[in-house]
Length: 89
Image 1 (spheres, rainbow, N blue to C red):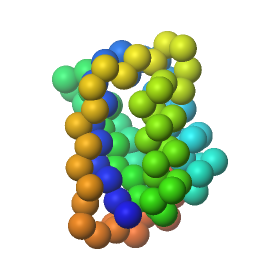
Image 2 (image 1 turned 180 degrees about the vertical axis):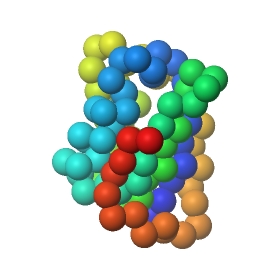
Image 3 (image 1 turned 30 degrees about the vertical axis):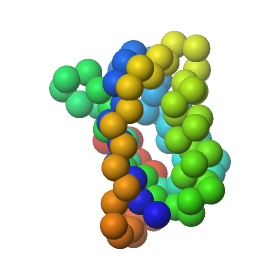
């Protein structure tokens, strides 16, 4: 299962990307995360469905007290990309 997500809110300059990477490593989720110029954070992740649900739940609720996610644009993608790690771009 693979998803593409854009997070809106207070998600830049608060450790979001590195917290996402740590959680991805814990849950065996692969893909990438990066800041966008418009102040959002973009992410693509793949893994088994249960792990992706836990991963997204953690990201939605904020991985630290400085992160405040206000809106999420999420799209389920048709196939996996074959990522072998989770990287911060």
